[in-house]
Image (cartoon, rainbow, N blue to C red; front, side, top):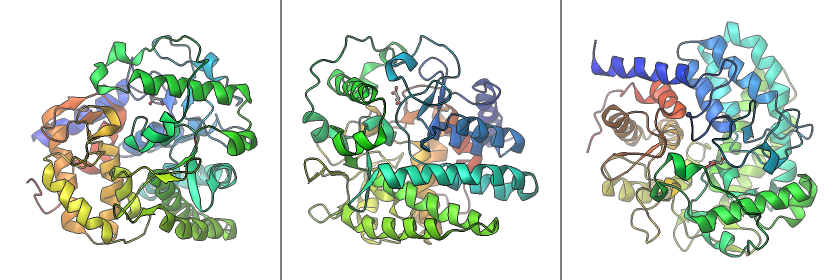
Length: 421
Ligand code: DGY
């Protein structure tokens, strides 16, 4: 048996170890509950060898959907004190104890891929999930969309918790009044790989703000102290709507509402273009400034179906600087930090989405280079949460569900070109 086959068996084992029956945790200790986008990737991983289990994952995720359509970013199916903040800090208002914010809506796109693997089995499941996903997307367009841009109300909502994209927006927040708290993440992972205390104070302060208004979406849309348009969120939602539209056509549903969202998101995407750095960038809707960030989010344009060749120049420049791309942040920036979470490390999930995009627009050489580098990071260093882009060393949590899922669903097959540089 080849080494690559052994790794695939290990990847399956990781999914099974993190499987709690109806949902999957990202990794034991550091993240002991169900996380929204982690779960969608887990479903995609399971679909490579157990289709019914894949659908079960998505079904469980949507069992936590709020009446207003939001699907929370953490769902606390059980009690576990190894994580902070728990359900009593959030006081989510859904049917199951949860956080009060969402996460990037990768579900529709991954659900479509799962369905395509076995349309016979998936037909009933997708019919059941379609209206729920539609309702979630509608929630985004109603409560997280302004001036053509999809925005986040909390850095955790982007999933890219401590990206430099949020630095100046967070600096504008004075976290006075944040209740005393004890972090648990730094008990599981080296603090140099995690967000700083200053970031955390503001994360918790923003949770308190949401809790105090009882997660009133209308109030938060108008009054949240943090409103930043995020290219990853924007591009992922645009792509998700394109996929949901195709699913809708297949199910003979009315797709006119989805069509109007696609048009609005396509139009809005051009506003994310920061001419001063020639890149898609995050934009602070409260302080009216760009973050000045070239990040892995900037390269999600192709995944969104926008074949913007302008981003290829940055892409090639950055990939030449590292051996294990795509770094989450521009390595030539002063803010780049190769170990610290979303400030430099490479993430397999982002690579897969960027890789899908590159492949679809016909940039096959670039797509296979990215896949090969992801394959090598995992082959050499295991299923880490993220990787140092310079030397590939593992960082963050280990035995990580989404890294295993990306291996099974994408990185294990290297395709034709051997892209190692
Ligand atoms: C964490 O606790 O670090 C998570 O990313 C929040 O979702």
